[in-house]
Length: 67
Image (cartoon, rainbow, N blue to C red):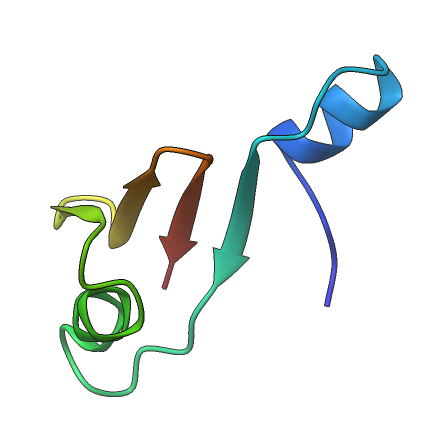
């Protein structure tokens, strides 16, 4: 697993890390969206079909799932 993107930038700039970028293997269409909704039912979940990503917003942080 590799940490990339915004969290690395924030860490290097000594800023608070409040987001994570994760990759999900999407063998079943919509698996990332289903995973997000089941794992965090109270979170705001937004699917971006054009990019194959899902955004998960909770008060403490933001998580982006890419497939």
